[in-house]
Each structure stands twice: as C-alpha cells, then as structure tokens.
Amino acid sequence: MPHSPDLIYKIATSASYAQARETGHYAGTPIDAADGYMHFSTAAQLSETLRLHFKGETDLVLLAVRTADLDENLVWEPSRGGQLFPHLYAGPLNLTCVAWEASISVDANGNCTLPEAVR
Image (cartoon, rainbow, N blue to C red; front, side, top):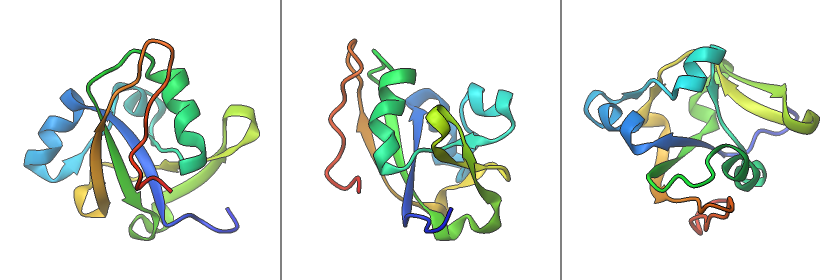
C-alpha cells in the first residue's frame, strides 16, 4: 500500500475480546483462525464490513490499531471488490498496539453509528 493510514480497525465480539483484556493479547475471531490471519478494515472500509459481516450483532468492540506498531507483519491484500485490506499474519495482536476501543452495535439492516474518532 503506497501510504498506510495511521489507524486500522478490528471488529471483535465482546466474548472473543474478554480474555484479551486479561492477557494483553487478542487472538482474533474464528474467521481469523480459519483464514490464518487477522482481518482489519480501514476507516473507509469499516461501514461496509460491519454491514456485510456483523448485521444484527449488538455486543461488538471496535479496536483502533496503530499501523506503525505492526511493522512488516501487516500485509495489504486485495479482497472485496479488489480493494486492498490490511491483514495481520503474526498474531495474536498485542493490545499495546490499540490506540482506543469502543463498544458498537449493528442493527438488523446493517446500520451502525461509528465513533467520531474513526478517521
């Protein structure tokens, strides 16, 4: 990716994130484990990711992750519609890389109000 944004976003369920609060490391969701890397979205990709994959989920945690902290472990690969998406291949995610977190919900139609800090 020519210019990596300062922050990328990880959507976690509260259940999958609960243990991370104790250990300081987040292992990801079942789809991350199945695919062999942790899925992230940019600010521009976030709403569509929530709409497509988290419709009707009310107990989510949005993690804002500093790309500079991920170094060469962050790989930008084509996915939905050929867009480049950030993927982390060396997991788990160290929570020291998380700039902030927020609780979010997605309604049954796939709508979500994102925190103002998403940029």
